[in-house]
Length: 284
Image 1 (spheres, one colour):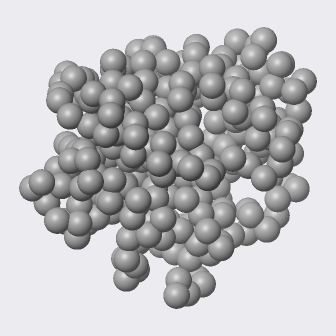
Image 2 (cartoon, one colour; image 1 turned 45 degrees about the vertical axis):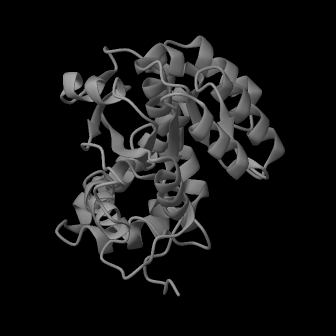
Image 3 (tube, rainbow, N blue to C red; image 1 turned 60 degrees about the vertical axis):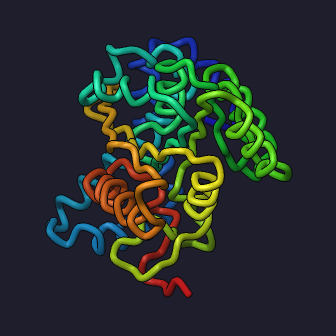
C-alpha cells in the first residue's frame, strides 16, 4: 500500500475500522503468500521465543501477526481518527499524564508492536512538550515520499539521515521540556541487538544513542508501547520513568530489556521485527 497512492487514498476514504480490516486481510491472504522467506523467518524465531506454544498455536499467532502488519499499514492513512480515548486506552492514565506533565527533557523509548505510528501521534497529542521523532526512511523513494507525507500530518517534526545527531541534541538542549521518540528494535543485517532475549549483547544502535543523549542532557527515559486489543483498538502500557541521575547504564538497560523485551514476547503476533531477523545466527 505504501507504494500505491490509490490504495492509500482508498484507505483514507473508507471508515477507519474498515480500512484497518481490509488492509489486514490483504496482508494475511495476499502479501503473506508472496513473502515466504519472511514468513519462514518469523516461524523459526517464534519457535525460539515461544517454546511454550504448540505448533498450531504458533501458526495462529503468525496469521494474527500478518493481519496486524496489514492493519498497521491501513491505519497509517487514518491515524488522526484513532488518536482518541475510543481507540487508545492508557493504563493508569492519571499516572501517565503526571509523568508527561513533569519537568525536564524526556526520551520516550518503545518497540514496533501494535501500531508504533499511532503511539507517536498519541504522545504528541497528550502533552504540550515539544516533540521530535527519529526515523529511517525506506530505500524505495515512492514509499519514502508517501510515508513522509503521511507522518507529517500527525507526527509533527521528525528527523533522520545526516545531521540527525546535531538536530536531536539541539532539540533536547534548547527546548524546554523537550521529548524525543525512539524505536529501539531497529533491524540490521538480519538481526536485532535489542531486546537481548538473554543474549550477551552490549548496547548499540538506537539504544546506545539514547543512553548517551539521556546522560548528556539529563533526560529521563519513558519506556512504553502499544498493544492491539481488537481491531483498531489499543492499550498503552508504560513503565515508570528511568532516571540516569539515579541509575547506571547497566541498570537502565536491564529495566528496558525486561519491560520492552517481555512486550515483544507477549505480543509476538504484533512485533514487526519477528520476520526481519534470524535469532539462529550469531550476533558477533
